[in-house]
Image (cartoon, rainbow, N blue to C red):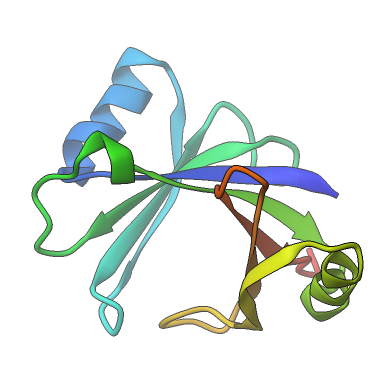
Length: 129
């Protein structure tokens, strides 16, 4: 297992990408619109996603502000098989927030679990590279 990315919601995607790239020296690694889900994802980081943890900036269309309490999204962990991982986590007493299945407006298999403090952690199935 490894940490893939940390997701933060942003009210202004261009402003956030500019900050992380121009102020902090990261690179925009990829960006994609999801019209069916009405959101855009931008992944930024210092290194390639295959080797480094990155930040996922999420812009939910039409949202222009967030309270600090809901700006945090989740931590993501890559697993070989999301279905097996959620079964193993449940067997060890972990709380599943979202059962394994395709993501909203996409096909990637994901699930969410909750840590003891209530923070969500996303499990993402390993993709063939």
